[in-house]
Amino acid sequence: MCGRYTYKLTWEEIVALYRLTLDQTPRNIQPRYNVCPTTDVDVVVSNDGKRSVVPMRWGLIAAWWNKPLKELKLATFNARAESIATKPMFRDSFARRRCLMPASGYYEWQHIPNEKKPQPWYFTRADGQPLTFAAIHDTWTNRETNEKLRSVSMVISEPNKFVREVHDRMPVILEAKGFEQWESGDAKDAAALMKPAGEGVLQRWPVAKTVNSSRAPDDDAKLIEKIELTAP
Image (cartoon, rainbow, N blue to C red; front, side, top):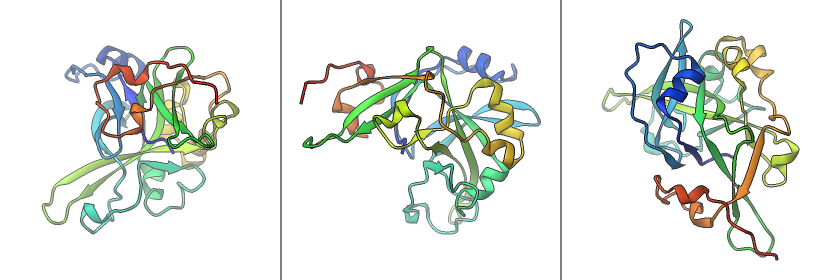
């Protein structure tokens, strides 16, 4: 599962990478080093071929959910590639509402024998470019307040060999040439993209266990600093 990532792109980088329409108001984006589920995240959505950035809750709520949000006990921040087309919570969004999640890197945890706490690793692109995760979104209406809430789920797949050394899942990472296929292709075309990234796409390094806590400061750049691991 991928439950934490970083987001330190500039507005100029986002506009260039996703070819946003120039009529959007520029934003002063603050770096985030501990993006957690249920917080608001930036999502790139395409409508009629035009992309825009929309804030959404990370943790999808299907439109048909008719209970209070606090009763949603499922972890919906990730959607597994193997079941996304059939799970009730995700299947309609996969068929109709696919989107892009920009990121700078993400964390994954390695469980080490005789260690009380897992060792976190930070993954980012080896070429230094931003990451783009395949995602799906939906809009839910709170029956009590009639307020609408947009939400998103990151798609995850089996890992490649490089990631498997640390964890048994990884986000579906899209290349720019696949953006449109994911956003507007049919389900079969989209499904073809739900596969592990190539072996040379990512790099990683160990980071301090401070990030093990979801309460670690979101603005603490030290969270992604490389540490030296001690020999067992």
